[in-house]
Amino acid sequence: MRFASIGSGSEGNGLLVEAGATRVLIDCGFGARDAATRVRRLGVDPDTIAAILVTHEHADHAGGVAAFSAKHQIPVWATFGTLHVMGERFAALDVFGFDSHDTFTVGDLCVQPFPVPHDAREPVQFVIGDGAHRVGVLTDIGNTTPYVEQTLSGCDALVLECNHDPGMLAGSDYPFPLKQRIAGRYGHLDNDGAATLLGAIDRSRLQHVIAAHLSRQNNTPEKARAALAAALDCAPEWIGVADQASGFDWRSL
Ligand SMILES: [Zn+2]
Ligand SMILES: [Zn+2]
Image 1 (cartoon, rainbow, N blue to C red):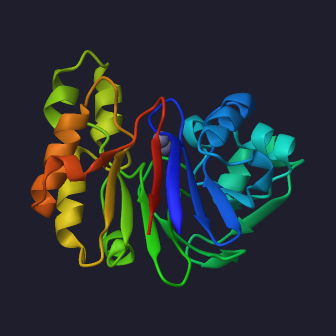
Image 2: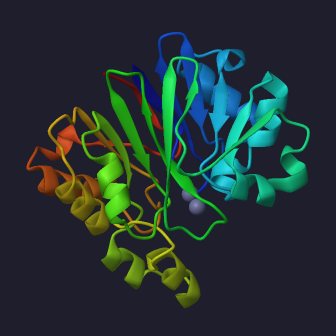
Image 3: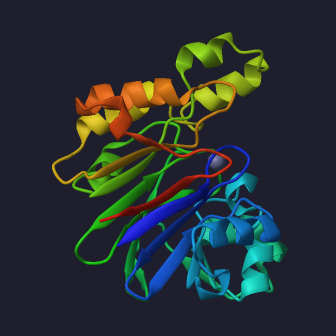
């Protein structure tokens, strides 16, 4: 099993996860041509993607889904709430709705969605497994919950939101309502929140931790790495960072 990012941040997200003959793309926040270029950069032919799994309707996750799905004939999976919001934009696609608590399979991959507090209609994140290993993905969450901690416990790899440094956000020139939204309970997880989450879960199987969805203005890779490394008691260099331009390269389990 392996996974890689085609880009991560407020301007677009996409994560490839692969096991056996199956590969899926979680979110597509890039235009169809840009997404295809990014996918090919990781050695993948877009036509071979078995499904696009959508976490929620925000443009940095769902903005490119319809065009990429249509161009490469890829089925789309999304919660009923997300499908409701996307409405006509997904109408012509091969779409599967799912309940945010129900596990389903796509080829060789087992997909476990779980609900998260975020300001979207029915947002989820995913734990994806192949029977031997589990990759947990958590971005776009305002605050963690006991259920989220339970779901991410025992994962072999985590892609974890480190959206902002609280001090940098507070001191930034963002309008006050935007600061409130980002730092709020339905906004985004900051470095300290991500570190606290890491400290609360079963980390015994962890082989990879990647900080993701970093704010360009209100965070730095160094600050995100330092926060997560402190929680794990590891060297900062061990923590991966997904960036907006190039995501991160394949990680294997
Ligand atoms: Zn986002
Ligand atoms: Zn979002």
